[in-house]
Image (cartoon, rainbow, N blue to C red):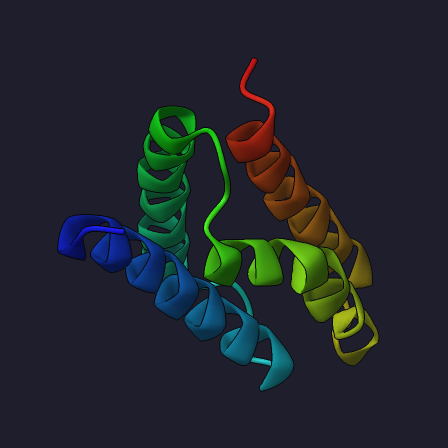
Length: 100
């Protein structure tokens, strides 16, 4: 992978870890961090469509993405919001792998 491709993957990983950490530490969903993560998904989608494969570091996140967020929902008064957020991220991940 080129440096630019590595940068895309690393940004995605970093952005996901920031969101997951906020959820785990019961800070909720930060809209600015979500916007950064959504941009990372978009960049990753372009990379995957070019390469025709998901980079291993991103694939590792995809495997645990839903459960990492869903497992923290019980920490929140509005559990449903966190569960819906986990669903939303799973849809974004699916769209990277299987673009519509």
